[in-house]
Length: 423
Image 1 (cartoon, helix red, strand yellow):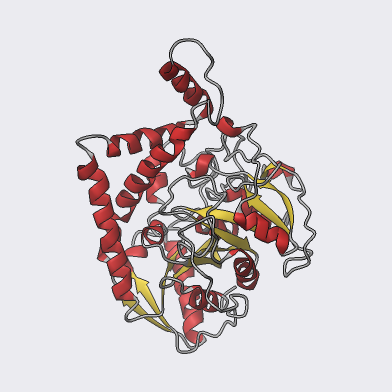
Image 2: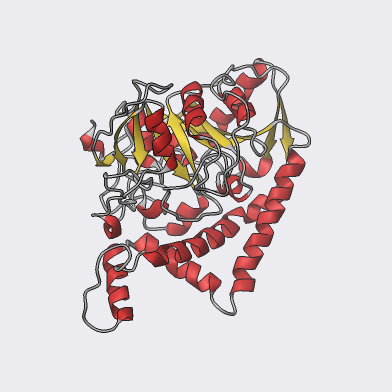
């Protein structure tokens, strides 16, 4: 294990008795996914001693498929961050450049794959938290369609946005892991039956006749070096028979604002359970319950989590719900409509995954707004509940660049097919 990179919060091997498609494979699991008998901290001091009494559905499926889990990976606290620097257990370093962040919030999972500490990994993606670290660490990450993978056992941040998904060295490997974890779960009413397809078999690399739309709004503002690598990757796909055309998604200029209102509102509700009684650090017995509650949360939560709880509570408060939360939900519907219209003319959409190369450590922590704006290309996908994949698209100044491919709902096959032409 590459301990110097601070990839794992807990290094513990969970063996499998299964003999399935993942037999012999090692898998790192993000530390917000429940593992029976192995602590699950969500990167927070609030849950430093929490040991779940049950496995998440995806963990059960990993075991049944024969995988060996090698540890729980570091993450931004409760998934709130873009760099894996808000963790209570310190930042994870990028294996490709230890002065840089690995992306977030699933930075530990992407770093584990990039460093060779695990063959595969699971992350969760609320607004880009699989695709961002995949891009920053030069690996492949898939954010599935909402409902394709069970969220049972995923510690909730923003229920209507988040999905568990695979991180791997290649598209075919990521697709094989998606085959194992996807499908209906009686514990999660939002899930549906997996289509009768093999995602791994879809990784043919055949893009002949595929139409790729490039939303101009998701390319504008990206670093020149990122755009150059993105354009080169598109040229490679065109050389293999794909057609590339510009499209427009006017609504995405409001996506970041809508996303953070919705995500923070859901977070403020979900994190209310961490009160020192049901879960978390005890606030002691002095004073009344409200004082004990405040002491528990003051000690247990980091600055970014507190910031998002406060903003979300404000957005949901009396007199402000319609002004902020309702408008954000209206914007979400507009975004879904724009994507649907775009997919009437193209098979997939393409953009840079992240508008910049990996940040330097500490660079974004002093300016949370800049960190939020860095998610501009990834959050629209979560708002529209669509699938997307990030694949390596080259390097700029020696740092990795990711290409994002977005598909229609439950169109994992087509993004896997297109992505495998590059990785």
